[in-house]
Amino acid sequence: MNRPVRRALRRDPRLLAGLGLWSVVETAPALVVGLAVARAIDDGFAAGRPGTGFAWLALLGGAWLVAAAATRQVILTIAAIVEPFREDLLGHVVGSALDRSARLGRGVDGSAVARSNLQAEMARDALASVITVVRSFAFTAVSVVLGMATLMPQVLVLVLPPFVTGLGLFLLSLPALAGRQREFLLADERTTESVAAAVGALRDITACGAEDRMAAALGHRVAEQAETGLSLARVTAVRSLSLAVGGRLPVLLVLAGTPWLLTEGAGAGTILGALAYVTQSLAPALGNLVQGLGVSGVRLRVSLERIAGPRGPDDGNRPVADLLPGRDGRVELRGVTFAYGPHAEPVIDGLALSIPDGDHIAVVGPSGIGKSTLAALLAGLLTPGAGRITVGGVPAHRLDRAERVLIPQESYVFRGSLMENLTYLARASDADVDAAVAAVGLSGLVDRVGGYSAEIRSGMLSPSERQLVALCRAYLAPARLLVLDEATCHLDPVAEARAEEAFARRGATLLVIAHRLTSALRARRVLVMDGTRVMLGRHEEMLARSPLYADLAGHWDPAGARVRAVRTEPHPPRVQVRER
Image 1 (cartoon, rainbow, N blue to C red):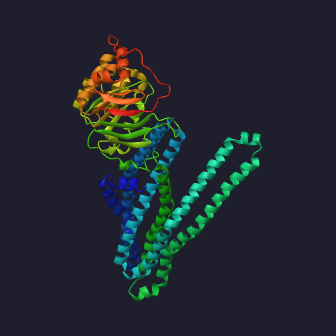
Image 2 (image 1 turned 90 degrees about the horizontal axis):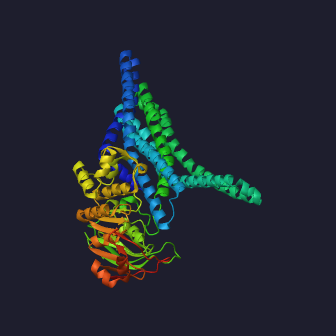
């Protein structure tokens, strides 16, 4: 849960260094406030030198002006730290929703994504608040100690012991305070959800005569929230005690110790300066710390817990940072079984398969036999119910997304420039883009829209043009595994051949879910999923070994470059594996 925060803080050490420097400037008033007040009175006004007094006050005013300018830079720096943190959380939210949708075989839960987005916003704001108060407290406390030591070291004897005691009380109570605050927030959310659900179902409640039962249920929620509120209030009393001990008791001790300070050589200005240090800097800093960690810190923790939910049944609450790079594009499947539901017939059952790095395989078989399921498993969008899948030696669900690309049948193009669409997955030079466009066959579209800087959107492109954009995007990506799931189905045979041959020359492991049998002819090997077994071999071998493949080849129309008929199975049987 703390890993996203650590990653945000360590992302750019220069930001932290800049934040520290600006914090020193921002807390300059905390360093000079007591000293300026003391010298203005003792050396200035009380000594009959008003010019000196006004000079010290002018110094204090200048420190406030400089601090105001520094505060602006502090805010900008904190924003630069927390905004990428928010983007990381949103990326995790969207990725989790897509993975869950793929596993369950249904659409993305938009309301869940919206709630998670709200949690990401809350986490961003809470992190900004926590950074602000912790940083401010640390620099202010150090500045006050240095200022008091310069003013009169004896003052520290009266101020530091109660301040440290109050701080210690708060830190000791923080775990309990965080737990109670979390329970209160969750109870409040449950009450709000229950009330909203009841309001939306008022007609049904009335029609069923369930008013008393619903009132009792809502009353239970309210009572639960009230109890958590009382529990929070009891722990909050400790927080109030720590503020009293750490922020108020030093004032009393300075006032009570005034006679002793006077015997030590302190003047009236020194006493007022010491009080200014405590009341204007130290006590407010402690109060902000208590408020920030006690409220914003808990909100940050709760929000991260909500966001960092499991991405799937086998992912173990895997955070985004645990994704690993693969060594190469080698693919290994061992005993892989997958079914769309606990009681459904497995689409893939006991599949064992080895694909060397750089191999080019075409997958053929009737519709519904599990070809797209296999593609989704290799891409990490689905997690097998049994067995193991590795890509480059890394479990498929933990492989860095940059290591593989899956292009589905319906290609996605977002609103933006053509160049942005093509380089979305890669940092490519203009020469690299030109080479990819020429290799895949996208030059005609580039000319038609008016160059790379032209803005495009999905609606202005034909299905074949969208597929070419997606293919070129994948070609430019640094992925070592490329999975084309009927990604050329809208292209004519010539364009399809050009694209597939370009990917074959590119130098990565290529798996093509074949739309036309010509894809199998271009591949090094063919994986036939025929409903009773899976066989892997060259085209000529499959003609002799697989009746299904021979049947598909017999229905192939060379003139039209298409398969005229493909046998389908309404309920795909289990797949057993035979590999050559």
